[in-house]
Length: 227
Picture 1 (cartoon, one colour):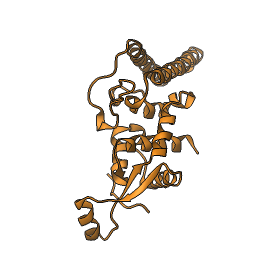
Picture 2: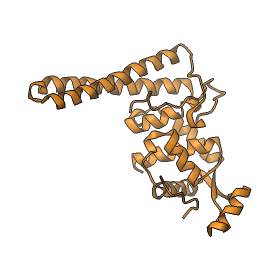
Picture 3: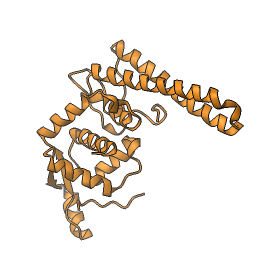
Picture 4: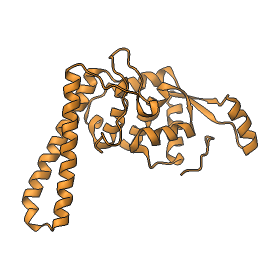
């Protein structure tokens, strides 16, 4: 399984842990709540859903709202299929949430993991944040060394671009330092989660708070039937 597929499966399981959804709603939530998935298609989502169903982590159910029942015949389509997390799927998602290895703090996966920090225990959040900070500090050191070696050979625009990249990493490190300090002090992020994809975690005391576009580093025709 590719890293990209793994991230998508993690995010789908996390969203369905909140409530059952049909494919179009899932794609919309992935687009709006998790920026890393802004550019992906139903051709990517539905094979992922089928894999999760085959693994026993999701089940498919017919849509049962009055809106679904009326819309499908009028549009000449089958009723929407709703995807629901199974007990095994919930257990698998919780296992994924507990992982703190390098994949948890790489660029794309970190954004998805952070989006579900409201469902993650405090000690795991700390390890992921500290891992992310360590990775970025290593990256920043390499960027500075590279700039020092090549500064005299770069034109002003290329030099400015490299400086911009360094400043972006420095900003994220400062942001991570603030989050780590808050976690160590026992403070949780407050406020409603954007898109509602993070829930109150009664075991860890974490309140949901999705990363907003300014805080984190880093028109489709709906087809509501599974193919």
